[in-house]
Length: 138
Image (cartoon, rainbow, N blue to C red; front, side, top):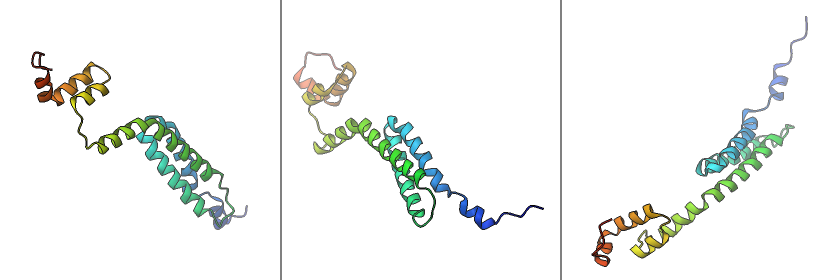
């Protein structure tokens, strides 16, 4: 009869789930980073999980390669997601700085197509009618 393996030795050799989760989340974050907000959220989760995994492995002989890979991938994903969403973030900051109030002229200057110009006319209908009384309503 073969000897039974020691249960504590097998448990010690087994990697904790968080050590495996860190690189998996890092890869998921990197893949979804191009979507913007989803990649940013997953990237931050990957970084947090990787840091916890590294802290748990501090006193053990286990390899830190997985959590460090997850940390690196999470940080790259966060950087990509911020770059993708930068224009949205910059627009939100500008909107908050101006109090959200734009004149008809500012709105029309920032409009990139006819549909956006129509929205500007609708938002500033009284000002548009006062300036251009002979024009047809938007």
